[in-house]
Image (cartoon, rainbow, N blue to C red; front, side, top):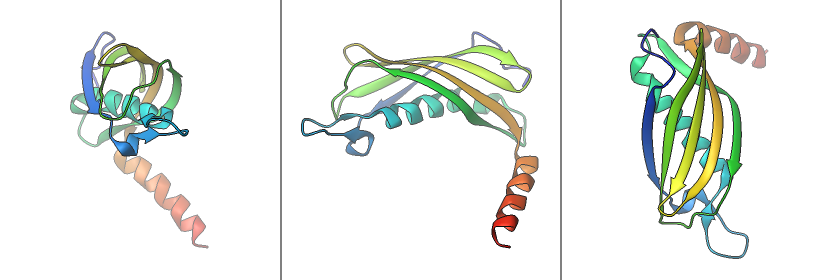
Length: 131
């Protein structure tokens, strides 16, 4: 976690496929839930290699603005910046561009977890469901 510092930056790309799209009677376009997923995965990808063994990060907050449509088949690019680190809470700023313009802005928070401890907590919930 010591390597996680504000200002850390990365870029992710995605070609918008049909499974990332919606259509409201017109052409298929990049849908907002897919943009949210793309932003979350891009932030995860930035920090994952810098986490200690046995750690991972999970998304906790997403604030997104979908500003313009992107047609199926066009590439999108997420420019990610780690804006703030507060112990285990990581805050990111993301800009999403297609091949022509800015199409989205996102503020996203992730929390660094201990995988084993989180697994134990989840196992208790699963066991409670089976009762």
